[in-house]
Length: 187
Length: 433
Image 1 (tube, rainbow over the protein chains, first blue to last red):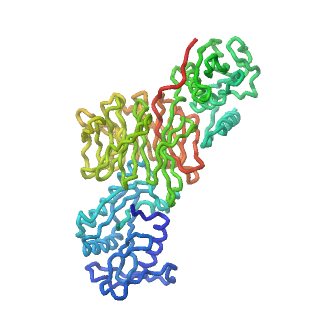
Image 2: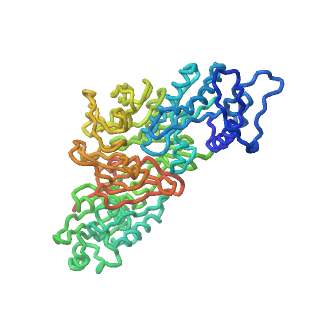
């Protein structure tokens, strides 16, 4: 099992959010149209941004973190967001998440030996067994999106944890919104 | 009177429970019953507080405060009816506890109807000296039957999952079994991955459950007598929501191996699997009607989660609920004509009940915001569900009459997924005199 523990996730998401905000727009020669981003003027996070090996010419699509997990990275080494969120009892991917999923698809297409686990999650409302099914439906929606963007079925596996693995244990709209999600996990 | 009930229960709770018991609702409309402290001989143990607690939790009786009792009889012949009439008492329970010549713990007791001046039951329950709690629950079962005509379910147990340190590195899930009142908790299975959906076999010897120990959901069956566990379903996708058939030969379950979640049955002895529903919507949470001929389940095939029935013979599906946008996780009541389920109202997710025939409107039984996992006692008098209070998962016991609600909380973590056992074999014996 190479689960990222949830504490680590929160830290990662934080880093992720800051880094993608600073991401360069050059991409990696991918067909993906990068939208202009608002540059975050805050200082770099305390964790040092991993720097590619200087002698390596090509820019890696994936990077191993010190905790043993693998993340998809942008041309400048910044971590690509690996979580997309959903509305209550919905499994439709928001158009605002198309770009980030396409970035993942691009990297998976360039690295056919790289596989991804697509994990669906729900908020705590409603019944646990229905949520298990709903989480799977969300994971399948993301899997279908990646498939349509060229990722091979053999690279992907989907699973659901229903409402059992919240990232926020609160019982308010903010916590629920964070918990209704699909996470892309590289192993 | 309300205060005395609280005091009595807290006293019981302090004995050895990992749970804390809190009463949550008014009890003014309940039939007053006086459980006179039993006369205790020599080394015998007082079981009266447990009987008091049991009868209160049924939501049909209100124990009379001992401090208000004008006399403390221990047999029917010592009862002065006037003493109880002035207190407005409907029933008096008197008795004694002693150790007999064979070394067994014995409760002698009588149940008296004050208004009719009649002895409803004169009986004896015998058990092991080291197990006064089982003796007390059995006495409560018989007292309840004498007063209501319905067998008490106080000797039953409940399976549930304790979740410790959720979202932390040391997250731990424990499948537990305890007395229905949360006492005598026994861990059955521990995992660092989620455990869900415990379901009893109808004879109470096995539990089916869902474990994520292998990384995703799989259905297992554990034999509670031998402790042996068996993997029943571990197909690609979801394996969830097991439910034993009334005859114990089959399990209904949810698999998504064929593309999306549908209802299947598996014959336990042969592992032969049969697909029951085939729809691109979510079908889940199957439960058997007690005749074994139909399954009731949740589906969002109509656009929102609603409850449906499928005939195992014709595989024809009929919709049962229409009220609101979310009705799920049905459980059929022992009377065979009603079911309880999770219902979303404008104020949140509540437990509701209704008849299968659809002749009556649904009635809401619980009043919190995040109520789920309803499970009904085998006598249909009480039900238990899980909810959240102050960020903690807790269990709540509510009488189906809706009058009394108890909360069971664990200081160790969240308690979720209660499953009320069927009637179980007893270690105590009952003799009517």
